[in-house]
Length: 128
Length: 244
Image 1 (cartoon, rainbow over the protein chains, first blue to last red):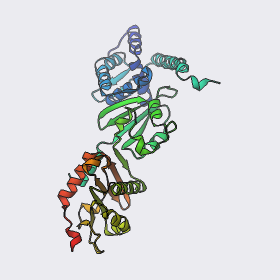
Image 2: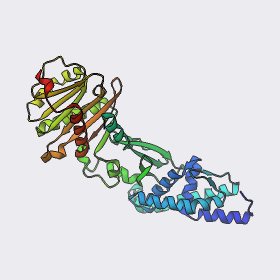
Image 3: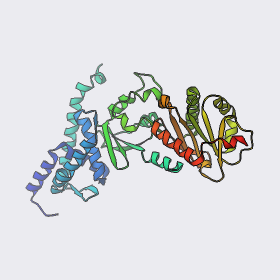
Image 4: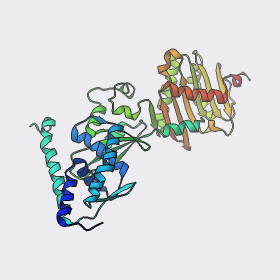
């Protein structure tokens, strides 16, 4: 891995975090460590059904996700030194504390957005 | 295709439903107890709101849905129906689970299904019924039932491994082997006549260890036909065993 300036590194991390699929990939990798590329494509496809409120997604959606993962998301994540991967497997890279902080902030923000969106859908749940 | 081949082709169609979320849903596996589906759980980070299910068969991805969608689809509260009638009106996601093929390793469940299939055959009263008893003493246990079945217009064929010492059941063909596959598999195959094809059904179970079974049953007429054809071609269609 080539040494990059802190400025360039932060640019890369923020770029990596600027996409929901890539953030969710990082959250899942953070939970599991090593993950197969096949499962990562399954997970991103399934997770999107919840984010986008779609009932069912099929093999075509999964294929599009796998292509985006291969040609876009994994290279962007690797460029930012967030993951390492080969043909089979993706593993989260060891990152400096400030990158951990960025990931934590992104995770909390995603959660808080979901929580604020929830009452509109689940009105019955909080009705007194 | 031998009986073992039929079983492995059913086995290869097993769905794996992986639940992703921050807590497992034990209820779900119970609700799909007799489906050809195996549930797995993979955690998402704690406090993740999202929860979803992916369905795969082998390496193939079949589909995914929010966990809510699946839970709503199988919620028994709005419509209290049994397993059979439930099959017809499942949402598109549940179709990924194959509502014609079921699996169980519980002997009681396999027995109940066998009884149900014999009952179906009796009600239709025509067509061909192939029952594999494994051993002669199992036939003796069901003697009365099969006498009654033979009184209908059904063409009844019994199969097992060993010698038949008891008197013949009238109108019933008995096919026996020694040390063949018939001793290892339990089956009830009802090949209904063309005008009642929807009544066709077949159960096939392997005895893995003494009294430990793994079995499948199907309501797909073409699969029932494939099993019935195999049995007829392998063990014959005549009633010779009852003549002597």
